[in-house]
Length: 484
Image (cartoon, rainbow, N blue to C red; front, side, top):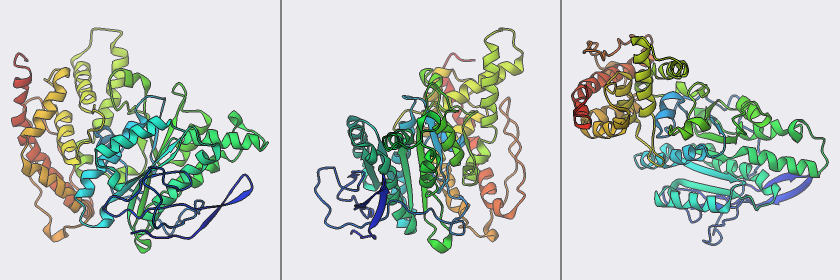
């Protein structure tokens, strides 16, 4: 099925162009085409579309009254992201870092993670469609991306818009707006979409080329004076709509490439000020084998915490603080060997937390398994494990834990969305007692009625997880029989 939107008219270089944007209506079946030119023309070799619709590329962002605060989680499948910098539907989260630090890998893993979630969706409004916009990339890179998504059967819910490095600058300038128009179709029809701009720094360079050729006055770094408006009017179109306007959402993950880690450059600071948070990647961490190479201290999610599952929020409450303290203490610990017991314990715990957050590429992890793994690390179940055995312990732990526990954690999603009435709120279980050196921290009682249900279930799941994990802790003897 295809739908035809209205024709649009855009202005490029003071010349009016009538551009036809071919937009497929993607149901839960694979569309005929999934790779498009910046002007909406299919370039995947499958021929022209039998039907299409036209949309305006340049439209105004939704108004204030039409919006709603971000409150639904958008899972990426990455432990480091879902626990430390959670993202909600309708949010704009920047991915920033030097070249070859794993920026595109985070975006691709996010797309792959939606496959299992979409298969479990009971209605079309629960499906998250993905739009990937490749700006100024090599054609071989785009072909490799298509192959990865095709092998994972992710093209069934994905659309790719490509303006490669060999395309003219006006097409690289127009590609993000074309992809955004495709994502807006789902947002305006009560569905959910994710759009990835990879990357906006190349769009700014293309816009600078056009402006200089038109002899417009250059500003800082030779960019024109309205380069901020170039990105702000694009990213403001990502929003969570109110219930009166369909309750659809468009989540944006823009990518910015920095030079030598300089996040204070012109374009990075512009986009940071526009977005709702940023995921900062470091070259040093990447070459040390910490992947995804996320700098915990510089990464932040300003609105995503409101959409984070209560179980995850409870489990990883102290995770970010412990990692920040570990990096600070580790920088000074290398200058001296005489450390007290508290410092050694902090370094020992921080090293294992860093190791547990590592994740291979193209292997997204369901949120319920993330909760169990992070719970084990935060509460000291991995403190006796050698660092090179952490990944093996994680696999054995997930294969040993009770399936009933995973199902109870999955149910938190529906409870968090308000499916259970207050009268059916489960009784709050007793607080778990201390066991040896790995004591489970006492939980703060809920303060609001709206949070009582998910927090109570989270406590019950955490207590059951504690019992399972204490049994699974003896797996360390299998990994390291000679350990203390």
